[in-house]
Length: 128
Image (cartoon, rainbow, N blue to C red):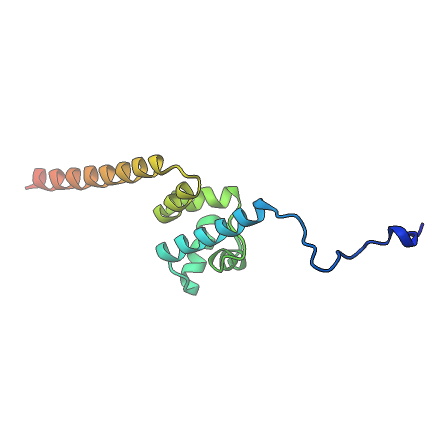
């Protein structure tokens, strides 16, 4: 089956643009924000790439793509990264415009670290 001459519109007219895909912009900013957070928290040296790959179970090339903001991590990889990186957690919450959860998360982490420091201090005092 061939196209008739009237139906052959395979190319866009000059100056015409395809409709804007708002999801493409969100995906690009997601990848960039996660890449910045990963670089701040882990760095982008080859040793850190291997470390992130071991944490997430992802391929090293995949992790390099994350760090270069070519694409972002999938759901499972993102959850593991958020578990191990406060920077990634904060970045994702900022993208979701959930700064209230971000503040609560930061405060909970600070309280937990203070609690463990106090318990360690009390344990060392009991030993003496």
